[in-house]
Image (tube, rainbow, N blue to C red; front, side, top):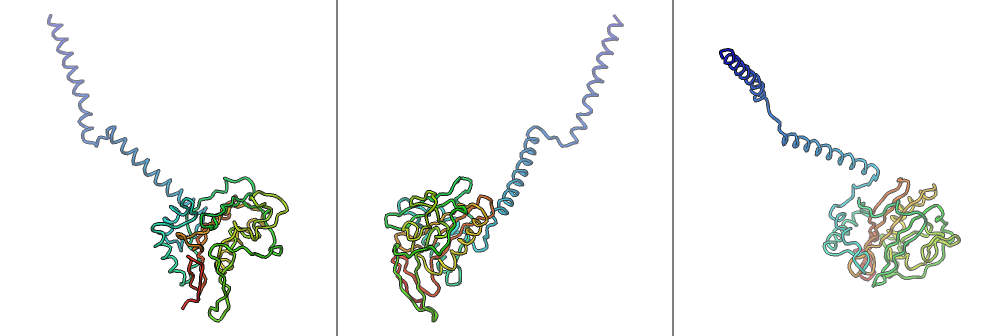
Length: 306
């Protein structure tokens, strides 16, 4: 009996020692910060957010480098508001709401020499097209010209020598000659949405077909444009497209006259281009104004600035 009691006491003592032994590390752990399951989740979440932000920054840098937009002259309010309501129902490309104020503000900048606003929003993608084609917008309820979008290649290039006479009078066409700073100026041009030399081998429906000359006096491809906007500014961007096509490139090109309200003469034209090779990408708003001339865009009338 004494032996059994002795063994029992030994087991209890051993158990107590083991218990004390296990409790010692617990005391040591209490001195260190404890990271529970929730803490680990928070750390993982923070790490994920950091990686996500880093990826977003890298993506922005890559996209900016690829697009190479010149945003020096971008006016943020105009840029972000323009594309919300640019095309409103049957009225075609029309400014509405706050656009009145914003476009008036841009127009005030024009006498200081601003011909173009560079936009960092583009609505066309070269990958969406497979072959040469023009999508013709036609007219709105006021007979104003609607946008044209075209997929162009070297096969659409032509020479200006084959161009004929023009007779169509787009909305807002009131032509007159003014003396500006001692020089006689014909204020208005019949501006092409898609330049004559970029529109060869398209039939009247915009389908590719060999043998057709460029779109010359086609009403759906003309709008009332100032000589300055057409000959001095828009031609720069048309030249970029022409050079790309001459080198064998392909490009999607969209031209949209921009009217305000029910005015008959466009306030400007919005041009976009995106090449399949990625070498050409632009989105610009060109003012439809003439230096030294005041234009009533509601009617197309104009007079010398006093």
